[in-house]
Image (cartoon, rainbow, N blue to C red; front, side, top):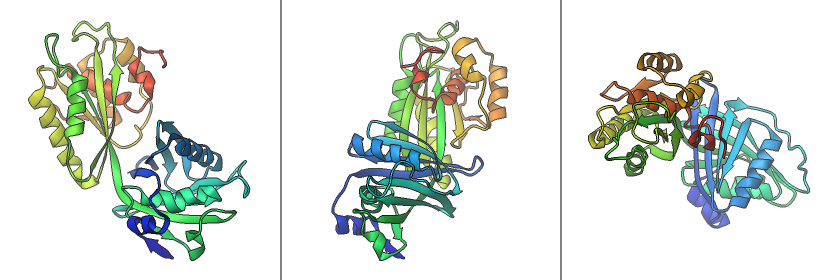
Length: 318
């Protein structure tokens, strides 16, 4: 086996195009979420198409701009390059394995796709080291198949729903949530994205639009408590409402789909039923108020990873 650090890979092949690579683990659900970012949209789309075709450990791959989000099963799975062959190339995620504080993702690539997994991805910020089974795997391109094991830190995913930080006279929850995320400088915490979630505009006690906000972070396990303390202090010290709610879920996938996905957009809910549903799903609240903002915070959290339809009324799609 040949082991190279990212700077060694860069020195060997020259600077390439990967901008980010990180892996979040949810052992309770048996899955990993992999975030990958490239400088070019075309390459990330091509990678996603080929990895879907190949199967392996990959469950799904979603592309947004120059970024890809993958869901994968833990463990190793057989790969099928499908329509790709030695003439047109192919790429696959063969496995995801947890080794203490590290995660090992195993990749294979044929022809030009081999350059992507052997020379480009191992350079990405977030990679600890790359392990090549043999010297031949260091010669990507042509008609050869090459393989590499990419070692990265083990993150977990933390999703936070926030609502009711504002009043009719001042403030905006989405602004405060985004400021909170972008101001976070805790080592071992990676801010991933935020989402505005349209809730039921017919509720009587609201500001104007009735919109909650959701934040997603990749976090080293030992840093979760520090992140939550930071978010709570940042939001509550700047909120202009006494009803602020902050809901938290640790994990990639909720244990089951919730009927409250629909209900938070279409019904008027009580605090008691929202508390019961949060407890059932393993969601907890970290706010001090314990008031109506918890309803919207739960709604924002439930829609945080559901796609752009979160921004619309129930049934609307962009």
